[in-house]
Image (cartoon, rainbow, N blue to C red; front, side):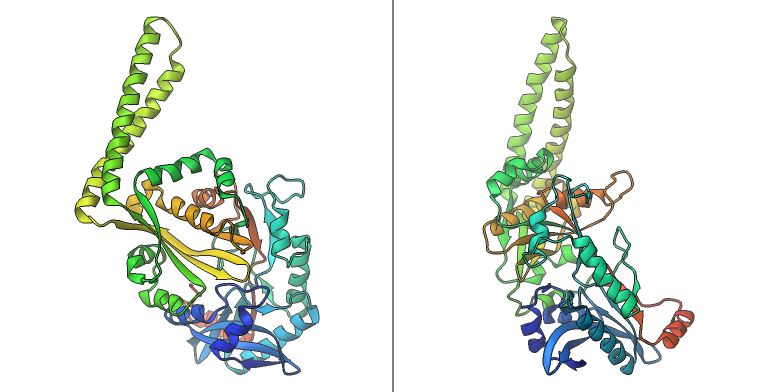
Length: 438
């Protein structure tokens, strides 16, 4: 076994056809990482002149000519061939040490568990998608947890990595928990089954004039202000990610300014009429000595809706004045790798979050791929904490699991010091140590 350096196109040809292909193990992501200040290596694991695996490696020089390194959602190899895995990682450690790379981190695309939306793992739990487990393991229904533990044992005990994966939030370099559903689906049937609140958000966004567009030009300037506010990344990152990238798509949510004004006015006037009817019903029931609790609750809810539509009237008028041709209020970057479609990044303008444009955007993308040849749809990262009272990100979980998604848990991060002496000196000497941020 030896490590060979690959050209970007050689790496892509191998990585894109791999069982564990993913958007981070691509040369486009490598170019995007360059814009974040990282150098890139495209490495192959060669055994008997045959490439048996590969990885994109990000590295950054941090101390006395020594670098730290990271394989984002890598490496790509046959993880079930334990001898191959062990040999590849041992060889990689030696290769990195020889090139003054003193530490290495990886978070391989190994599934630890598939759970229901409540985070429940037990086999008899309703909502655990057994089909998802099978698709993500090459068509074979296996128990993901023991499978991942066996691989983890090889990495920890045979190659002497340390495990950093027991996190529930976003402590790792890449998230460990995602909301995923299987394809194909009947979109109309699914819409009738999702939570009523989620369905109401979708309808409200459509009623208020939100339109969903696919931007064939992949013009970063159309969504960058939203992306910059959400992710704090330079514009070159997105340009490099999208350049000549056939596996990346851009979807935008745009407010039709005229519809926003007209529909806000119609919705406001209708709710005023409904409120007046409820008021008369309450007065009539009071007069006849009947119970008014239910009608009173409806009236109070209607009062809230009126205030909401009044705010929309004001906001829509300003939007039409400033953006007569429409306003982009949300975006999604969608990636396609192997059998999987993923929302790689998304975001929305905070000032228009009450329109729920991002919810409609995610739904329309799912609907677009509902009858495609892809097998899974990834809504994006969530947390592994499902207790509402303990999770400040609970709203994120709720939004991304609202379209009948299952919870996917990756195995997490592994790290190793390839030069322990230098790395310990780095830890002791540098107060503001570099952490990977991608």
